[in-house]
View 1: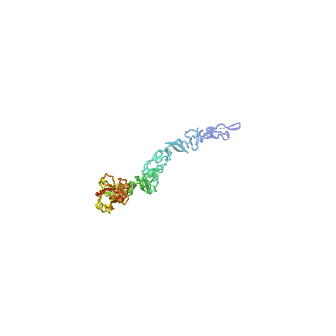
View 2: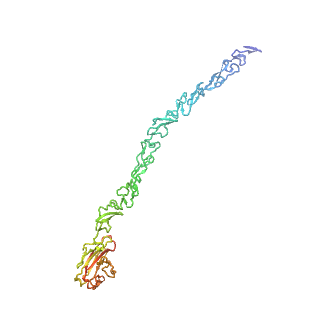
View 3: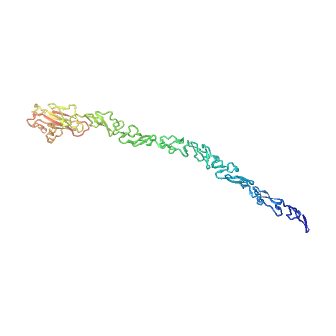
Length: 506
């Protein structure tokens, strides 16, 4: 309602819902107090809205609109657009849009629901509507994380345990890189030489030119001269040099014998020097070494194959082997091995002459002619060493020789060796030690060995008186001379000692 006061126009009153808020009557009641946010309901009442644009309706402040990402979810004007729909998971994008928090912490990101999963869970379908729907601790398609599908490579039944891919490997395979997620049981332990029978079981290349894994066991041929004697090509390959190993010579478990030999292996063959007096006659030092005692084996005497019995030397009844030489053990009856030479056997024959006085061999009686015993072409033999031959005989005296010294008896020992002597005894008895030699040189009746024994028949035969056994009387010619002879050696001999006894007159 207009008015004039003191000559000036004024506004007396405004219509309901309007107001003269600028105090100028020229434009009257210019403000719509029902709809003007700056003058809402009255002049000076300016509406304001947090996080939004204010409005005025029927003279009361209102919220005309909220800023993007904000909303008046509680319906209260005074606190404006109090809710951040860009980040509030209970009012995400719009009021009352609550984000799912299954197995995680719900999030609102730029007005869109999201979720932070708890450990062991994942939002593998990418939809926050069902939260973290996947258990990554036991899900083989998302083991330990979304998209991490356990490999089925040689894993017949994959499993996921505590977020790690597991499951038994197929026979002959193993997970050697520790990742059943990416490649399962990637290693063929039946044939892989670096994982043979198990991961990291590297087949040894020790003297194995080409390593091989077969059925999970390291194999492969050994280099020439080597062998796998402990049956373990995994750790040490072909560890034995069979060319020089005395416990595995030529092949495994073939030890060289130490029987009378210093064991040695060369070129895969047992050899080695035999001990003195022993030899390897069967050519097998591997099983029995130097098995033959060549010092005492009659079939291998001194060397292999030297058979003392083939042939047996002459007149040998039995033979032996002593310190590696064939020897005669026993001669046949009446023979002796005097020279100890095996090849001629028992070369000396016993002459059969008694070696005691009481059994003396009787010689031919000496009459007038010369007699050689046993004959002019044969000999007695003084064997063995230590033998003594005893003879007895008679020198017959004819009356026709009485008056002459030309027929005196003589006994000669014919000895080619020069080692023999004879003693001539009075033949009255074997107990008599009286010799038929009475010279001073012979010590009276103590008989001295001689090779020639002579005597005269009378004292007138002066040159022979010193050894004249007959009394110088007129009766000597009435009796024959009876004597005994003992033949003996003055030294030992390695040969036969042949001799003859010659009876003669001179």
